[in-house]
Image (tube, rainbow over all chains, first blue to last red; front, side, top):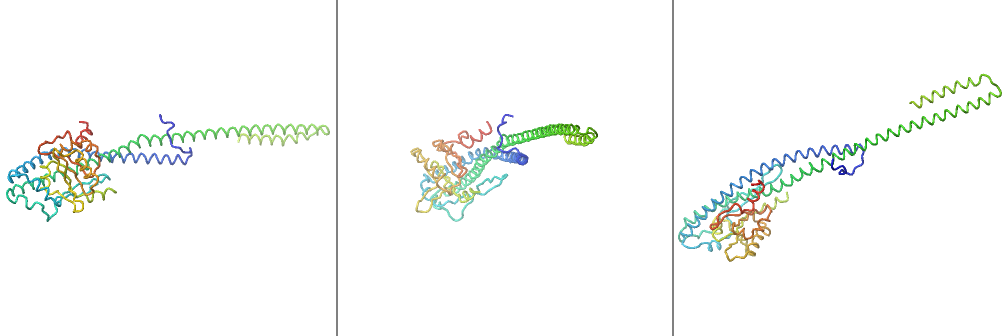
Length: 263
Length: 123
């Protein structure tokens, strides 16, 4: 693996191995969930972009019709009414409110248009002539603005979804390409360190056993020698059965020692 | 969510456009003037004599300063004059919408959002 050095700073113990394994499992679950979320959002996103495309084209047509009806008004009133209208605009009759929609945990706002009752800034407009045209123009423009509001909410959803999808994809990629490999590396590292420790321990035990064997062998030899010396010393006085008696226990001892070494 | 309160009270539309577009949209009833102390209008009439800085200032006011505007409508040919501002505008609220005007037909190629759509789908 490329990132042999890329691992978390942990002590190679069985406990941290357990922690790492749990972490790897968590990361995989999270990765799956986030990937599914990203797919759901992308599906929604594609649908919205398609609808934006349609709505923009529709808006072109609607605005064209609306400006035509405004031209009718100008013709019927017989002069430009722009100034009069700008001056008499006081309070918005046409307003929007935002409501929310939940798409896989993302709150998408959507605008909803509504008309406030009871205020009409343009009661006097077209009073002289062209009142009917003005009325029709108002209706046409109200419809156009409704289409615009719809388009605006699509566009807001588009911007927000775009942002959210980017964030989710970034997380998915981070988990897939950074967190999971790193955790796997750490687990591998801990395993190899533990194996190493095992081998060391085995070697140490072997060494200890060897040493013990050597020590007992030496002690054995020494004892034998001492007994032999003692026997020799006693043999100067009486040369009879005692060496035999002594040799019995020494043999026993030696056998016992031997067994100990094997064990 | 923190942004929830942010768009709860955005209830007006704002327009930057030529005289005809403004007249029509005001007839639909979107015009609003805030109460006397500051008397801010939510629309700006742009003609050939209007400075680009004035348009930018209005755009800035509608998008950043005023917290009661949910949608900013702007004529496409005017958006072209401050195109860099529109293209770098990425906030979700208020939404900036480019609309066609009487004299300038709508060109989907110029729209900043449609261009993003196109780029995303590699068309």
